[in-house]
Structure formats: structure tokens, C-alpha cells
Length: 172
Image (cartoon, rainbow, N blue to C red; front, side):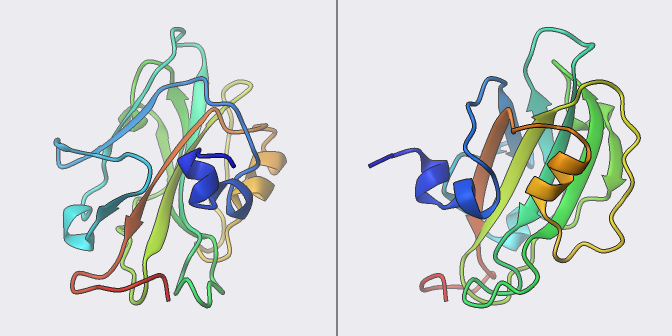
């Protein structure tokens, strides 16, 4: 059995195709809360968009960052999956998301029931791109978006779990 947290958390399959990570992706909320696979945050901890640092060694390499909630509005009935929370493109390697172009502004996840998986996926672009914002955030599809913009497979991904402030219990 595979013990990769992206497989165990069903990020691979539900959101992304299997891939090999080869670029460093670091996501930090409030300058001290590092996101690592399967960690948990409450909405009050993630109100402001995070700092996102991207590795690499060549500023000419550009990346697209996608942040989605595949469990919206609830894990038992994810009829809005994937809900697009943030989309940034043309991010140069060795920098962060602030150096890219916000296509869809950051929206803080606000789950109403159950535990939601919040996914950051990083794709390497073939060059500078013009990306059009989707008409709406609900029912976004990361795989289809990557195909439409010829992004290929992700080069890095990380996810965390989030539930409402007073949340307790399972995935519901």
C-alpha cells in the first residue's frame, strides 16, 4: 500500500493525476503556520492569503498555483467540487506567489460541515501565459484546467484539512 499522504488523502485521484514532485513548494500562513500534508487549520488561522515560496534554480521557469476545495459544500455531498479558492500564474522560480499574477483572488476556506481538504497544486508553465479567470469558482476542475493550458502534470502539491471553528467529528 502506498503511504504517500496525497494518495492516502485521496488528493491523487480526486483532484490530481499521479505525478512526481520535483520542485519545492512551501506554504506558510501568518508567517509561522507551515502547511504540510494532512495538517489541520481552522478558518480563523487562514483568513489572509499565505506566503507561497517556490523552489527551482532558473527565474525563466514560470509556474501556476491552484488552490481548491474538493469537498465543497460538504464532504458527503461535494456538488460544488472543486471550489476554486485562488489562482496565480506566471510565478518565476525561486520566488513566491506575490511575484505572479493573481487571476482569481484568494478566498479563505469557510467549511460549514465536515472536514474539508484544501489543496495547493503547482504546475510548471511552458512559458509566459495569458490565463483567463473562470466564470465562477464552483465546479472548477484542476485536471481540465491543466489540460486546457497545456500545463501537464503537477510538479508539487500539498494539502491541509479544515473544518468550521467549532467543528468536531468526521468527514460527514
